[in-house]
Figure 1: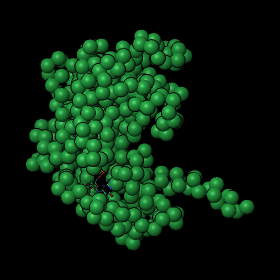
Figure 2: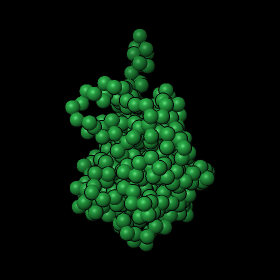
Figure 3: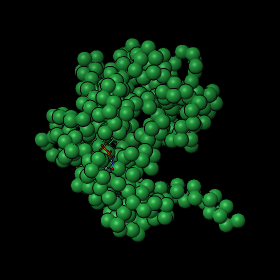
Figure 4: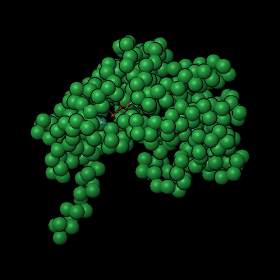
Length: 350
Ligand code: GDR
């Protein structure tokens, strides 16, 4: 679509009595982007999403809302490309969720990780500065920026000590957002999000890996799963709760940084035990440790967030607890696998 043209079908705009807010989500096709898009649509927003692939691509996470959003293909590392999108869309709010998210991959692709999670943020902030300094900007920071933290739990004031290329790149993104807020007075905020999961998580992440394995084993589709460090602990929450926090961050009077976390940690062992118990199985009979999946010195310890500021200022608190999250993931995987099995069973019956 050419710069300056309207992005949404005219019906979507004129059918509302009040002019709605327009949000631009960079990286809309991922777990967080798609959940955030659904939340914003439910609040009456017009939602435009930026994707790297052609807009005609079938994005599984966006299937339910595909007819209600506009997609723009753009090079998120190019300031010119971003200026074009911002000029065409004229958003009130911009959410930057475009970044690789699987931490171990950042050791294999450190330069690419830095380009997206660090330099790309700068390109976007520069583009906003050029097009409209009044835009509200959300940066997806991550608990990985705390790395080997000496403070437990971490707050917005905890010094950053990242250890992975992903964490280092995210620390840059975090600081540059702060820097543009101070230097240019942009409404640029960061949400420092701890692990947040949903059925839209790819299977590489430990939560989905475990929930999918528990579901598949309970349906007789496989017998075991290989995991890394069972003692590793994380502060896990439900992604639906966390995208609500993103939105709240941009509704404040002033731009700021917020830790978004559950405040409690659980081990991978507890994760497996809870998931397998939910489908009536003993995890110890099905989980094996694969040493190649252990992160060693790159593993993070004592990463747990203190979200007091978010609770007080944003009025945010998570609605789904650890057990509820694990059950929700397992139920979704059971349902997904059963629906794939059904046609096969029907054929076998014939
Ligand atoms: P993380 O998530 O690296 O914390 O980053 P991940 O689910 O990959 O790992 C969580 C913990 O589980 C341990 N673990 C395993 N992890 C994976 N992936 N596979 C395994 O088989 C396995 N066995 C044990 C890991 O060692 C680790 O301790 C997530 C991502 O969403 C980031 O994008 C985000 O920024 C941070 O959370 C906050």
